[in-house]
Length: 381
Ligand code: ADP
Image 1 (cartoon, helix red, strand yellow):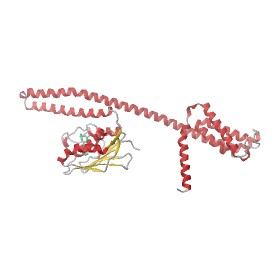
Image 2 (cartoon, rainbow, N blue to C red; image 1 turned 180 degrees about the vertical axis):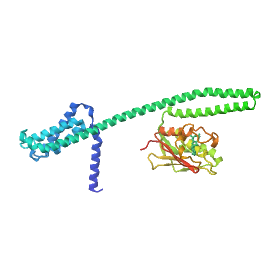
Image 3 (cartoon, rainbow, N blue to C red; image 1 turned 45 degrees about the horizontal axis):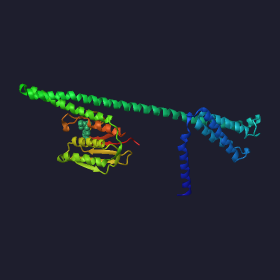
Image 4 (cartoon, rainbow, N blue to C red; image 1 turned 60 degrees about the horizontal axis):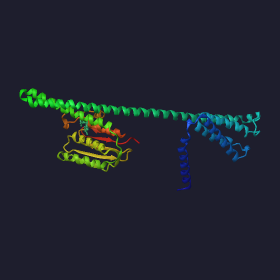
């Protein structure tokens, strides 16, 4: 490394070191008296330094006073800064203007021009620093308010999830009763019912069964919001091994091929929940596919921050107008029994898991050709 580069790096590091520590001295709640005292001490030090480096007749006083004024404004704000400026003006007139060490009319007159410029500079610097202080204070207040609101929304969502869970849970019991009574009716009164009557009972049982599945989905969805968010290192490839093993058993009969494009790596999260994401996306990719040879590709773009996982398929695709609403609970784009059925809750649950880790989920799709779901598991850098 050349000498100039070395000096450059040293200067850069030194400036960074100072800048990093400066915020620690900006502390406005130490009381006015102390702030003015600090301004006084700083100007005293600046004066000593000035007297040390050159004789009185050499001028130069403003150069040494200015850093002290700036620091006084940084530490104490506008008025301690202005106080330091006025002190600087007095010292410049009294000590450094001919006749030296006098407050004569002549000294005041001689110092008038340079003092005016110094006064203007002082006011500009101090008010700019004060403006930054105020901006910082209002920004901090906004931040506190935003955090408060966020905490309120989180608490509200949690109690909504708790309510949904309890309500769904309580709905299951009468539903079980309906289903059971329909069964008794069918078993005990079947001979006395005509064909239509039997069909109606079958429908009651089918609908009760469907409602029960929907309630189960609702309970899974709301349970997610009530549970603690687990954050531990998860080897995503391991998770994928488990999910793929389960699904492969189903897929071999249907001839679905899963391509794993490279390693997915380690993330912070919950292995079970991450497994649930892949499980949902894979089974959708397999379900919504009418091609003779079906394939699914899974991978991760490690170049992005945070890493972006993807699940690609060569299925039926999703029209652009549905890219948002497929994430709504119970939203299905097809008739109840088409493509193997479903509750329409899978993607809603996936989205909720992803968002609980600060991530997001989105998709690209060409109807008739296939879909890619992308997701991240942490907030944007
Ligand atoms: P479900 O599969 O139970 O209907 P989901 O929430 O998982 O519920 O999906 C919602 C809807 O989004 C599905 O009904 C389907 O129409 C559509 N969809 C989801 N994944 C795919 C996919 N990979 N390809 C095409 N359509 C999909």
